[in-house]
Length: 170
View: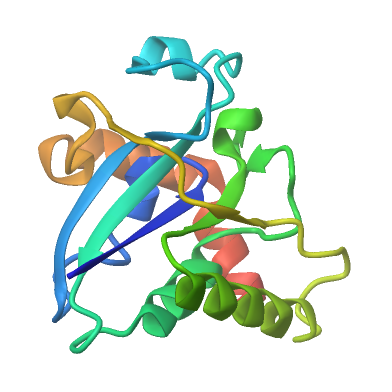
């Protein structure tokens, strides 16, 4: 098993694209990249901790290669927006691919270049490729939020503009 970590704005919206696929053994919402140890959602949402909202994925690379995770990641985000994602604004909603080893780093850089040269976007691709920092699991009510609170999740996602952007650009 390996791990992958992605920041794509609101972590609630970053779970569903990866779940229930062969070779994916777990998806955990959390925080990473900041200066506060064991942060809470209340702290992270202020944008002052330096943490990103992230998903950490445990996967079997023999069944579901890392490159396929990257192929799923990019179409979930606006890679040209460095101020957050869609309606979610602030540093905690920035995008990033966090790598755990050299193979992941190289694959992430290659995939970023592929997106940048695709002609899909007018602006530069600003999503960062960074070494994986310490991961902090988010509070339990954030785990599988879309299943626990489907009505609110659906409303929030519709209002966010994420799906409109995805339809237009991907």
